[in-house]
Image 1 (tube, rainbow over the protein chains, first blue to last red):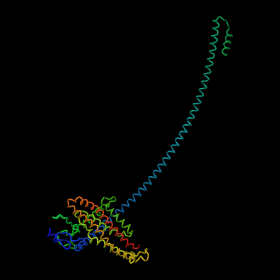
Image 2 (image 1 turned 60 degrees about the vertical axis):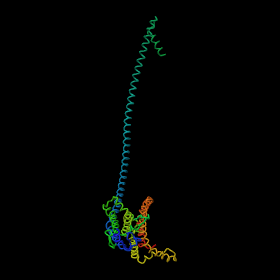
Image 3 (image 1 turned 120 degrees about the vertical axis):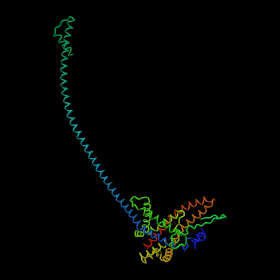
Image 4 (image 1 turned 30 degrees about the vertical axis):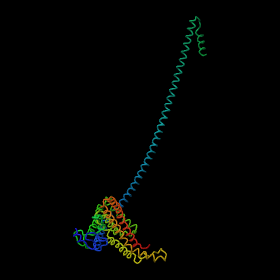
Length: 181
Length: 249
């Protein structure tokens, strides 16, 4: 260990391998540091400027281009969607107006038919009513006549049964007078 | 890094972690020697390549996680350069991105235990800082000619104050690279040294819970510092670049 380090020992390192003063200020090592720094920097510069930076710059530009295009496409699609929605709304309005019209027409037609039917029915009812009234009148007249005949017969029979005698004309006149009264 | 001696004293070597060692065998460190510093710079480079080259390999419009990280960092630095330097500063974006990524990845890789922190070396950060300084100064004169000196002449200030302000501006201009580089190296070095000191205290049974808690706390702080220092270095570079591009106040 000691022999190895003494070989490396120079102005800046003591026999034990420790630094004498600040290693940063050791002039013996500075050419080495500067040389390798320059090598590293030049290599790094060429790698960065020739390969890495143009590539990353291109990727970033491409990405911003893609994003711009996508935004434009999205805007276009949005406009199309708005147009389609407007067309749909218009179609809906038209259809609704059409439906209203059809409903109104149908209603008017039905109303007209209904009126005709009602009139006809009314007329029929009126005819039937008149017929019925005639029949009722006949029946009533028949009934009155029958009642008069029955009353005369009954009165004759009653008079006969009570032992009275009366001619038919007198009884008939009396019954008729009674029934009128 | 701490050895308990026979008399019970502790010896700390918190700076030993910054020693530059040859990676293969022993011997003197020449300028071309492959050292531990080389290894960790190479690892930082590989990590960056992993995130930015392999991560973006798919070029996916919907990014993978790794690609997303790369894109976030790209967008962050790109926006910073654009906001601070203006549209004409975007040309220098690759340079600033290189600086930022090198510092960021070096800082974070240095937080791995037993790792080496290249950004704690003053020689490294001085090259970065003075590199920015010279590049920006030369760029300023090339772009603006002598008008670049208008940077030091506050035309809004009262006439008497202008020469004084000019002197102060010139001094502050030349101090820039020094503060720029020492800020980064100092922050990273201090943080790592403090971690080592706490680790040394952890060898003492009595205080080891406190010391280990201290390591955890300082480590958390260092995680913040690593990101913040990389950000500060980068945004100051952008500010200096802006001065070179638009010297008028």
